[in-house]
Length: 398
Image 1 (cartoon, rainbow, N blue to C red):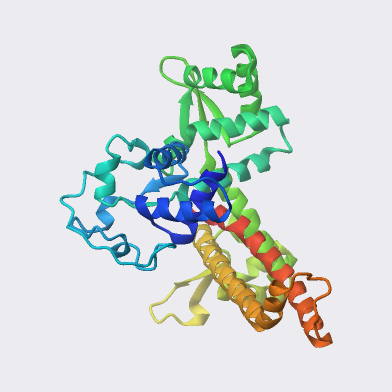
Image 2 (cartoon, rainbow, N blue to C red):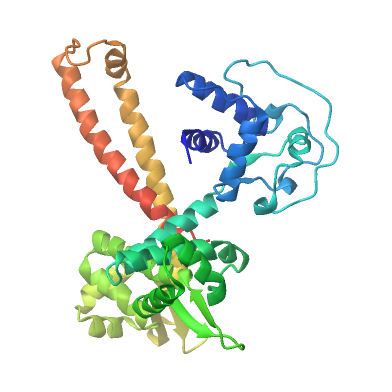
């Protein structure tokens, strides 16, 4: 894909949901700013959108999300949007009935004029991007066990089975050997015998991620269980977070409770080989952070503490949701801090932007000190944000 595809995706990321007319205006405006060719012809838009749609990078907003009758004014759908060239409000007649709902991957452009009049909205397919990030994480997990050629084969297999993951959500997708061999031979430029050997090596090397089983006709079927692999990756990341926040003993307790649920405090102390006092403190710290849970099992109806068992356990699904919330909260805080630091030095930054020679610009010693401090803080914040951006797709349960 080219720069126009990248620019169109960037515009959709910045504005969320846009109609076809808004896309044409915004992309044309950005292309002219970059001194590139104009982008106003509808066939060009259809071609780019069609390519992005075939790659599942974008999708049409499901039409049940907005009313069946709407104005032709696009600002009705996107109040924050206004044309970069003109801010005039346009009004027109009402649309008729919205066209029937159609899955995004089956939509084509024969009825583009009809859909334009009915104001179909376009958006980035975030689920697909998160799925691709997770596929790369699965590939990175097994990279140490296989060679580069087998690793490329795994990515190809995941890409082929991606539409089936959408259809069979929550289940391991599978495909018949006769269906996948021609794709492997065409993509990797090898014979079917070599492709079969590589598939066998992939199954032997990746454990539970890729498995081979026979159907009732005796043919080989290959199954990819991405969900199980992602659970292992998420567990490792949660353990790393706990180790960083609470120390190695807390991580040991979390692993123990993950393997053996419903343990009393004394049992946790003995199995983890940690003093009882330290075990109690760490358990309640983990409970406060919602990494572990406690359950009361009373022997009597009065729930007296002396006659009650307090059992500790780990609910992994709940812990994953908690980490995902923390990641979003931390990302928001870091972005707010970065914007605050930029606003504090707005005057100095404006001087640098207006100066022709940024090296010899006249700044006071205090301004130079503040600028150096802001650069240091900005670098740390941006590196932290980049790390969080890598973690967020891993904790998105598709």
